[in-house]
Length: 418
Image 1 (cartoon, rainbow, N blue to C red):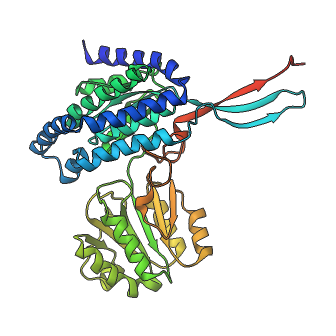
Image 2: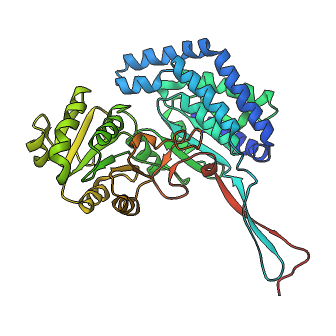
Image 3: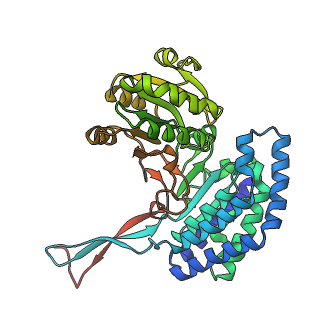
């Protein structure tokens, strides 16, 4: 069977399964999620054995340390998958919710009812735990999903896919509601992107090159974010100790993820007192600073920044630093170089915080908090399937509600249009 034929079959099965899972009762979906959590815990050794083969192949292929970290199913990652499944099971089911209802002058009641999107095509790299996150969110929101992971995680993804199918079948749900495409052939990805009659939306999750490829090739609507060029602006009069903690956490907690800070903007009025201390704290943790001329004058440990550093997503212990003269200049910099992902301000001034919130166009804007909080779990959504930086159909982390849409429902008692 060719890759194209394989994908066509998988998508047709998913479309058929979507009709059943769309109307599945909440308790049955929750039972499948809880059973899957138990199966993952019970099969930890087998999962890690398959994952070890992927990791060894990844090291041999020269994957970076950050990529290997994303690929590895450690004890903590497996425990996190199981916990995430239980958290999603505990969340309210959005399917069937009436989001509004109003009565027309003729007595007709009109409302909006929340419904699944249908069949989701999910294309992703490296992280096998994302297989479980995507399966959990799509199932709970009544969607079927076709999963196309990267070749570096194929054995891990297939092992998880088998446990997902087992949990679905034992919970009397269609096993084809969640399917992992079991080939590394690039033609399979291209074929998936052409299934516009069977797939309702494509969600890519990975590096910028993958997402741009998907957006260019897909016949299906794509929910995407190209990269996370996230900023922290340290405002005049900010609490310096707080600002250092926030900047260090935003950059160093996990530098290889999309919500890590990539550029630090510092108001000129606080730069002399803040920058030397913050630079010392960052350099102590291995961060390479790349600064504007005004930064270099205050923190000579930094290297000169060039024009390519301001729009860069380093995904590493590298940080661009710029001193600005005003809140407006900081917002202008973010508008020019940012990626509409995550921006934060550290300030004691409520009015300036409100101006920053209103004036910055990103999926999450924070006041006095780390950029690392742009995450579905951290924001109370449960697991997320990704962070969308395009405004259609959702903006920001995509949890259960964001994997649904609404249809109109009208209730009458014999009305006819005059």
